[in-house]
Length: 402
Image: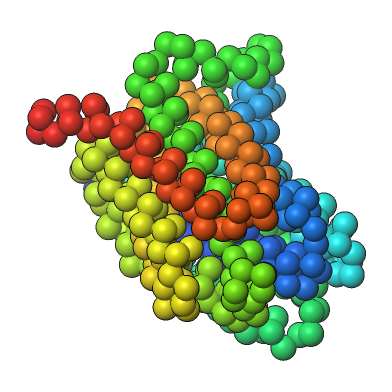
């Protein structure tokens, strides 16, 4: 029996996504480890520069809100638009690799690259909605996530060991990131093209109308805003906390990459497929609160267990939460939004993610310098707890219904 067009579409997209997961896994280590390690451990940049690096993806998510409107107006395919962003990221990493002695070029290149990478987030959701079947979307997405996390964990460990023996020469590492960005663009173009609903005029704020008309969407965005702020506030300090000797550890590249990339990514591999399967079957609100619990515990253990073992346990717990959170963050709009509006819903989601990312990137270092990382973790964990309590009515209603 011949395959239907829908089957051909998801299989082709899935194949390209699996191939793309390799360079995606490599570039994932920039934001999680190596950008901040170079900034703190090698270049000894100031807090403003470190905040800019942490805030780079947040700026990209902010701009992603307007990107969706622009792509709709121009009539570009989602694939081409995402590929352009990754092409710009490749240029940013290339500039860093060409100028390893310049702190200012390092900050500018990394921020541009991380920003451009984040632009694709709301566009990707439309591809997953259009090409992946509803009944297996979470499983397919998490399978790709497993591959990406495996590459990220492996690359992070060996790249950390390599960097340890280079005497501060990090240039070749960023050439790798540049090449991988080009590969990501190529594999995305290789997917069957997806188009958004074309508009006759540019209306960048039209997507915000969904907040007025959709009460469920509004409630989830509000809860997610608080959750994300608390989580990002703490994540901004993960590398700084164990790299900066002022906080009691002062680890080098090998241990930093092991704790902040390899361990959470190995845990990600083990747990993400489970989360993906659960996503397809479990009530969303129940799943959201369970994932929040892992974030909550991971943050408190990481910042309040003064030992290497405690750091590893904390990152492992956070890694379990991150794997579930990645599935939820990337796919939840495909569950709640009308099929034609997934990209618009996701652009609103990424807009608010960018806002909290920018605020948390700045506040994390300010609070840490004034009161210490421990206070940052308490503030962050409290935000996650309150966010979960906000969903309690929906959670209880879903449990009674079942």
